[in-house]
Length: 321
Image (cartoon, rainbow, N blue to C red; front, top):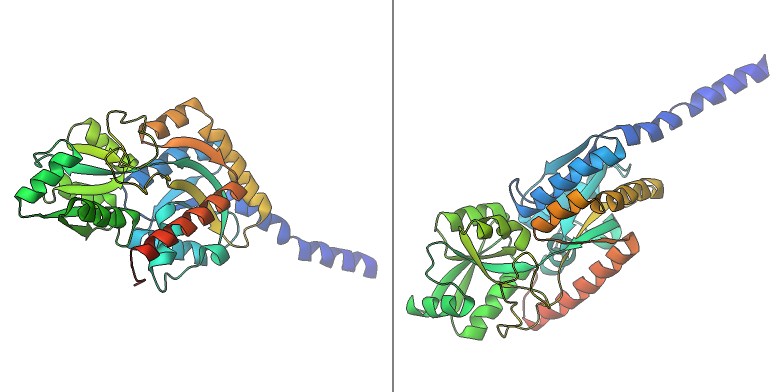
């Protein structure tokens, strides 16, 4: 009788452990996005969420937490339970740049996050609003000079790669270009479409639809070569602006301590969906160069990108805020 009672108690004590692992797979998966709905990152996340849901057999929800260049979403990831139900879809700015330009971002990617997998690279670009009477970067510079040598250029977030680009463009061409920070690309583009601001720097995924509809004009892109989605647009290097050849990345990150099995499950599903012709085509149409990166490859890319920008930021004399 005593043996039976002990065995029963042991079995009861083990019961919560089994459902917990199963429930982590059955509960909805959240994809945190650090930018508003309607922007490029949001559109990318929703394409992937739909495909991942079918692949994983689990509800996959996009949760927008906009503000501070992705900082709010990153802080939410830090405090999320490391149970394989929360992932952060992010590009270089939040992971590689913010920790360099803020004294206290509220998270440390090296300690608080674990890379899961990368799935694409993309290019940032300079675009002009419809009311700006210029069709190229040289024409835009000439127009700014006619306006007294001063111009305002929207950027999706302060202390970002676009801000450093605007500063360099102004110095290169002898004009004063003021960076106007927004809470993501969506409100910046809205002001450009309303001709409230003459130019903006954002990612090609953010700008491509309005460029194709001729509501905005992309006039220069980052990268060592032209982007296939806008082959007519020259690179900044072609226009004499060096230093922006290395392309930023998109990847998924999870809270530190997330079980390896959960990371592998998600990574394998991601590899499967981005290999699907339909998904790859949709992401390519959004301006991405799609390609799978393992967790190790994504981590190495993040560290290299961060180190490169640390040198650029230091050389530019920028002080963390």
